[in-house]
Image (tube, rainbow, N blue to C red; front, top):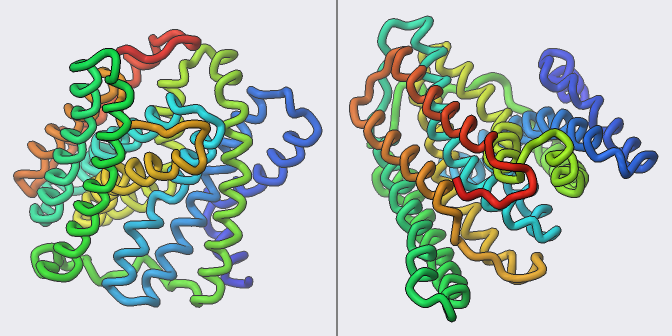
Amino acid sequence: MTLLLKEIRHQPLLWMLVFVPIVLVVEQTAPSAHTALFVLAVLAIVPLAALLSHATESVAEKTGDAIGGLLNATLGNLTELIIAIAALHAGEYMLVKASIAGAIVTNSLFMLGASFLLGGLRHHVQEYNRAGGRLYAALLLMATIALLAPAAVADLDLARGEVMAQKLSTGLAVLLICAYGLGLLFSLKTHKELFASEDHGEAGGAGWPINLAVGTLIVVTVLVAVVSEIFVSSVQKAGEAMGLSPAFVGFIIVALVGAAAEMTVAFSAARKNRLDMSVSIALGSASQIALFVAPVLVLLSYFVGPKPMDLQFWPGAVTMVMIATVTSCFITNSGRSAWFIGALLVFIYVIFAMVLYMVPPGSHASA
């Protein structure tokens, strides 16, 4: 407990944990204050995500490379997964799909671009292992193709299109999870030497004892689930009051909030010229969302949601994900980076955000 309190004292981001009890109190005393609940929930999720990330890293350090890598892969996006499950349970499928697409684009464009930019401002030219970037970009490309398939089937037969898209989505979900598992096997077991770097074995600091890390992981997961329920229940009306569409909230706000902790680590690593870590976090997280989180949500929708969810995204979302994926493939092919490359990636992300901001609050996204 002393280590946990010390961590909170030395990390300004964790001071925002004060918003956790505040949002719980406001939810009990003023449940109709949707805008206030929405803002407070966002402020509460950010430090919880940071704490969750630190606990996950500490558990991974104690379990060895293979199991540790699997833990990071499955728990690295736990915040986004919990928020999405809460939205799934509430039947907010538009928010779920927007958050999935937004997380992929945010990680592969904004997080990667900002890492290149911040690292490049301190270091003239930075280099990183191309093998990791190529693997993640290839996995993302395959997942994006999978997102295109249900829309194509739905357009073939208008009468049975929805049923066909649902059946195809279920099959694709199983296929993507298999591809995700094979990717882990390839990078962590059979060809792990291709992905090694000078920074691979370095730790960011002293890890927590395993009991503290596991206990924190359990408690914070429960808190994130509770706050996520409040967030999802208030997001629609708060978004309308603030002039924001569900597409913008899911694609931009939820994605940025869920990735806040990972961004902190990625940006810090880039400034320290540890770009291998930044690229691994950004593109690794994006591929995890596409190949693990999205398929798991499709399968969970049979048990959690009011009806099964498919992988049929609106055309604008698929276009943005495809552009982000192709851009990542192109950028990571060189293994070198400078600040201007990062700036261009961030500009592309801002263009997407501007387009989604123009979507009316009460309408479904079609941009």
